[in-house]
Image 1 (cartoon, rainbow, N blue to C red):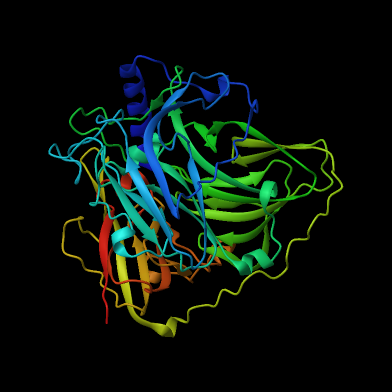
Image 2: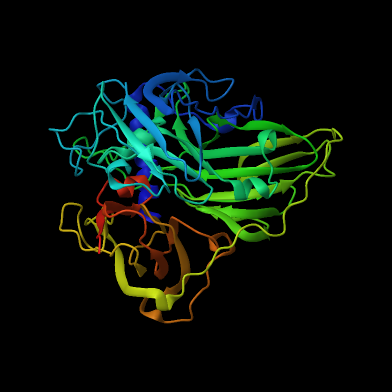
Length: 494
């Protein structure tokens, strides 16, 4: 992501200088002094969940002052919603945020013009098969003192989804401020597999931020007061469950880690410092047919991975979860407790492949970037179209389509489709000058977010089942999404 790195360095310095507090070097802080937070689980009242968005001050590291954040119910990440497949859930999302934003709004972006309120929210459950009126359409935002009650049918296989703000034009700022949390779908089939649960199942929400020495959030700006948008944001403070360099005390036995990349733009290449392998058992939309042993894997923004890590025979070790040169957290392996250690199941859940012959249509869709005379990115586009142009993708309900996503930019873009799950078919060089590349092992299951690499055509196949109505597809680099790299599409009833 070439242009944006230069802009990032310039704009981060400019923004820090104007903020009154110098930037923080996270390496100046002691590592592994804070225990990893266990994320709270939301409890329904009379069959309905109520989550309130409000400002809070939370400590991200023992030696930092509290950080001003926007949260659900005062938590960052927000409380986890645990639901059962086939059992509908009602959630009221309540906006009690301040009337003024504390991060820099760009009024030149579509949906964030001067006639729009500074603070607006609408919540999307990423990966949910949901009627359009409950999907969190970007223009369905509401302001302080108002709420929206959404119904989630949960007619889908068990998976770790997540919820986050989706307001048009300021989504990147609202999520960066803290508006995100997990949404776990479970069912009886998964229960019967004997997978690790309770304290041996650990959700890990990874996101990066820029911090100042006073603990406050930095968000870089372009240096143009009238147009502060920057193409990407990469923080040097890598948080896990809302803590910088946390540790987790574990027993010498297997643990199930449910990982989410909730960063605005950073990709993570995850591995363990002792070289041990991961047992990959699930991707974005649920379990694989069987575990895969992998030494490392990549998570793009919005992607999830379900892995088992075995600490047996490692008593007394300190093992770090890393992303290349970055240390994210530490596992401290204690003594054995003598309890039963269940084996990793060899068979999980069928993932029937969608045959290409089932597709009634193949669409070729491009990823584009507008540059200025200085070689700087000005906006990103899907298929060369802006948000408010007529809808061009109108799949018929319950039909299968192949989407060939041709990336004409120099960046890799994580592309997310609302409503549907899909399978990755292959990748080919542009103009098909070369053999197809099969999906990576971490893409062998059901997905809802796919990495469309630069100079490649990434092919996915999906059945557009569930509900008719208007949804969106977009890049999950949030700065791209907020600047035109999002388009509506419509599922049409036959």
